[in-house]
Image 1: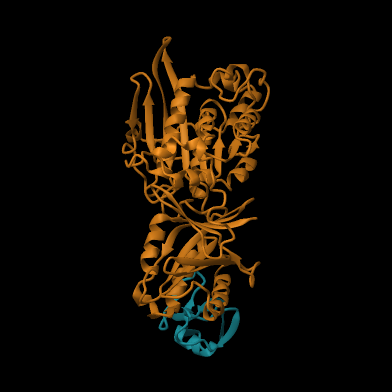
Image 2 (image 1 turned 90 degrees about the vertical axis):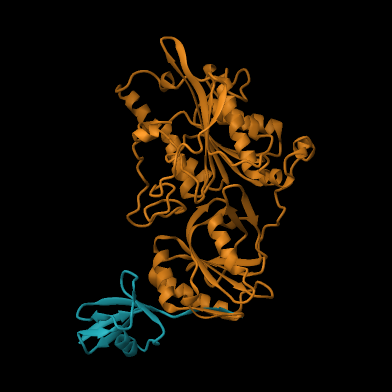
Length: 475
Length: 67
């Protein structure tokens, strides 16, 4: 069954809830929606809302709220660059049901939306205390309405999942997990967090050294993964590629990962995509995922993953590792993990120090080699790598993921951790980089792709990388 | 005589310039409704509209929720 979900920033959701919990009078609030239409259904993405002031209502009391026509124009204008409008009102008592007045008004609202724009979704919610009913329509569906099955609130420390009264999804669906397997973990880690992780769909970009190390750990917790990797296994991979067994040379890396994950847990859902990110096929396969991990061997894929995750409001874990040598001596060796959260304070990889000086797509590198512009195989330039630092990156990454969902450390969640293997020290770089409010990937300006989903407004392009400044290189 | 369109309905206007309030009256649009221009900007009742070239305006009513 295809599902409809609302993915909303915690800051907007909390501000709305403060108003909608009013037991004296009704409120009518709005949000502007991007849409992600994928194989599993539709995700409506909300990173911007409009909470009217009392002066914008002509009437506001228990049982009735009227929003002035002048302010309606403002809301419609603001919604122009988006794919849908969120309309959320409260009842001061009783059940959360749409009334005859609400139905009549929805028809008018849809007409107004159509006059403003060719087509737009209308997502309406009604709330009575904690209980919510929600449904959606557009020009092609109306007069039919489809239920909204889940509201997913993305915060800096957790993801909250709320199921409206009319949802087609049962609250506990897909959340069961092997309690016996986790008996020792459950002594300190919240059961609800393990259930939540087990219910999520993870997308893994890159199934090489670090990607395979992460998969090897994630398999203990996740039950549904999509792996994107276009490479085949070569003999030189076997010294650091988890899930390799003798004779795998020549096979697709995704194939051996799927085989070993299914061997570990036969009921695990594993989907594989035999192509390099960001191919169209890989993008389509990752669009239904809830959480993305990217462990590629080039910054172009990192940059595109940052862009993808921000545009579709997906938490992203990013890994990198490497060894630098001079005159036959190791000068630096280590790895890093960065967390990109689709929240107000969350930094994209570029704001968090991603080196964007060389973002050549891997296909272009292959093309240059094919025409003789560059000599040697691409693997000749692949950075030196070793299983120890790959495993360290995977461990730190999983630790961040577990802490995000379970909050078991009680400490502030880091979003950039570096492991220096020479000194064997972990360094928290979370405060070394600052979010650029004007960032076109994670900023909240009109030219940002954050939360836009499938459709970018006219004139808004996918951003080009910003060049690093001297300040960036200090860290 | 000028012509303008509000919500796809054509309205004849005897003057080259008319206020939004006058256009509402000509088009039978309730006073409390809001009129907006091609860019989606809300117009005030006293705003003057040039009707000598084709204009496509829109009007919306209040939005009400209740039970």
